[in-house]
Image (cartoon, rainbow, N blue to C red; front, side, top):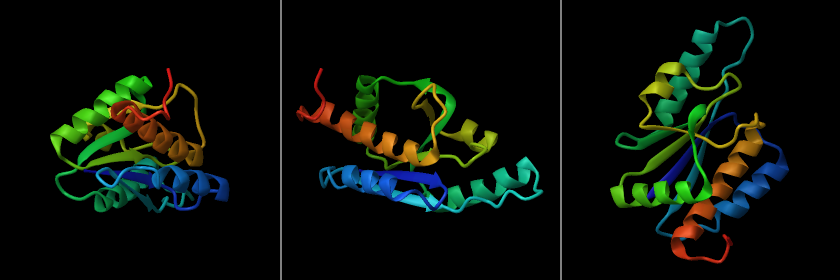
Length: 155
């Protein structure tokens, strides 16, 4: 199974990339994690609908057919670490690859969000995009560690 993190925005600070890379290399071979960064549409004087459409097109192009889509959304289902571990196990048992999608500065296109198989919320706080990548991969690693009985997650 592969976890694909699709994130709108191509540049993140070095600290965020270093942290992301550190967690990404910890996953076992049977659970591959890949990051696909897609270009943010330049804001300028474009309408929100135009911005959403351009970013949605890039996001959809980055996700292979047959992949389960999980949108990160402030209105999504809140999860504890244990609940995310259960979700991860369910995704693994389902056998499909999973794309976790992080929107751009204005979030995700509402129709894309609605069409996603799931919508989850990482936090009640508003987080910088670079921090979302790090928090997401850390929590995915923590969820894996819960399921694997690995000592990373302690209760």
